[in-house]
Length: 369
Image (tube, rainbow, N blue to C red; front, top):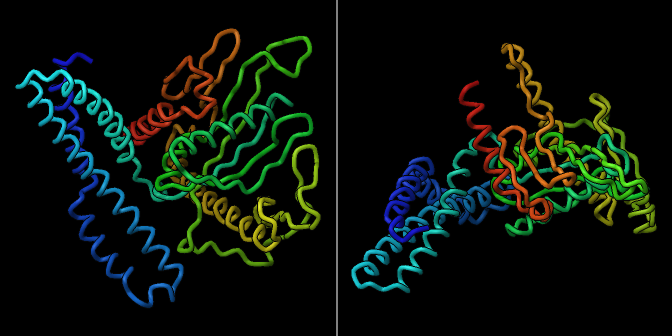
């Protein structure tokens, strides 16, 4: 950027941050923080563990929101003063420092502006992600494994925790499916725009004639169930099967029947977990996944009732992104039209621009609905 543009850019950032402050409303959040801090300091807080987790989680998130906004405001004020002093004194080094700080602030303010668009009922929660290979045989299984690595690398880049519940490996290469959680505030709201069918076009590494292959993988994103959701699953409604955990190629990873598969009889939903060594732990994890899927089914049922009143229906869950590696290299979101030629970067977790564009697109779609 030209140095002469810095004052205008700072002015635009100030305007954006002011809009964010109006949405976040730090002062009202400070009042709520004070109340939650009183609750968190109560000696009997952990006598009700579910409520204690709710209080401490909410407190942590509010404190993080306020600290982030106030930190950005302080840094923006500081860089404005730095630029004014540098201009008065003709200090080239300080101008260069101000330019660096402005670039960093622009990136962080843009990201926070997208965050303020996440206002759905479950957007603040952790995300439960399932990837499934679809049409395309072994290439589809390999593509599903590539997507799993992509999301793991994305989470790693941001310092988010990932817990893998279950991976079903394909016989030749790749995976049939994988289920994992991403643990971070607003993980669900952020990743929910990744839901849908992903398409890969490339020269198949599994075809000895070197032909081009199109394959598909599905991504499902659900909010992680919390204690307060009260998803009741009667024992009579489920069938629990246990089996021996296995790794790639069927290699046994333990010698006991610790893996758990739960079938929800009324809906036919099936979930499994083999990540933990204990059958009890795997059962608890599988139940959490089942609860999340039942919660999502209830949401979809409500949404279907609303969509029945509309003529255009709901297109979410359809094909949403294309990854082309041959005859040219490009990744393109079919909803937002955002695209990049840096396919290696995308598969290495550089998907923030796609996610941000998806969140803005969804808000626009909601506004005109």
